[in-house]
Amino acid sequence: ALFALWGASRGAVALGNALNAILQKTETRSWVRRQLISIGATFAVALLMVLALGLLVVGPAAGHWIADRFGGGEAFDVVWSIGRWVGAGLLVMFVWSLLYKLLPNTNAPLRVFTPGAFIGVLLWLGIGYLFGLYLSHWGSYEVTYGTFGTAIVFLTWMWLSNIALLVGAEINDVLADLRKHRSPAAAQLADRDERPG
Image (tube, rainbow, N blue to C red):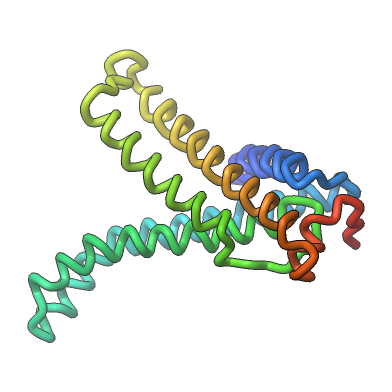
């Protein structure tokens, strides 16, 4: 588990470097501090993902049980089919806001509902839907790669997800540059010479 956490945190380090490049921030934190932040962020994201998967597994059964008690059986199916996408989007937006706050070298305040996160999450949902269509109709990774097919699909999905996350960060950076004279938070994010403590 420790090796898996360490390996996964390497992705967080790389993501932090990419976010620093997008925001044009110079890394001034010590190597140890960056590693601890990356491991903590990886652990937090893993916990949130387990929570989300648990809700996806337990949610329908618990929702049907509650809906049956209050006489809303079919209505629950409609609400669940829409609500799970909205819930997934909100959870991803929260996770991304944590990553936007923790990984780059900035003291800009935590903002959950930023335009970049919103557009990035919409892009992520669209990419996930289209990638799912591709896999169901044309993808034959198991035939080509055998048991490694699942890992390749997962890594491709992670790569696409990171692209959506970085597009959102770029949108936030451009908007921070445009709003830096009106918003202290935008000014702090847009400040290229910021030296966090």
